[in-house]
Image (cartoon, rainbow, N blue to C red; front, side, top):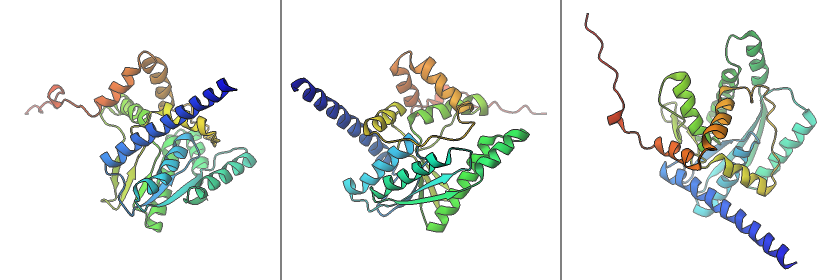
Length: 270
């Protein structure tokens, strides 16, 4: 019994340590980039995946730790992809309960983005991911305007930041990535990412420790995108070589030495 008790205490200690590490990294983003001000109204994009559950949970606690008087909404969108409806409905009920327990107003709606994405894929006229993302953001922007919401919260994390950097280099020919805070519509709306400094593996471990069920992503394209490919490639072929590589890649985004980057050459005169 003594050994079992010590093991249980050790597991609890590890869980608490992970919790505080994640909270500290979220605080680093919130304070460092001034993501949240007292009295803000936030709309959390709650997909039901690990990332959105974690950001929802920690933002719900943020009000009490720092008395910021946040007004929190969470929106879950049925994107319209084919799925097992009964299991999905149970998952949505769990998300509603998850939010209610944390004092967050839960919203739910359906949009035809999935159907439009599948049609786009069949015609090959445009990317299904572009169609889906465009329709999703359009809905979120309109909802934010309707509810007079100043900021939309996304669950993008450190790994997303790094992967986006490589995607932009490889496919857009530019050095850029997603921002921790992004101004939209001349500053009337902001997109914020409180998990900016949090590695994906921390998020996954935290969700596993809490035993939170994950709502499966029904998108048929989710594992065949360039993002999915490079996420896996970096994880298996780069980060697995040495943990310091991921840390250095992320740090490099904040340490751009313009002195050793070339400027565009002058155009020749005719």
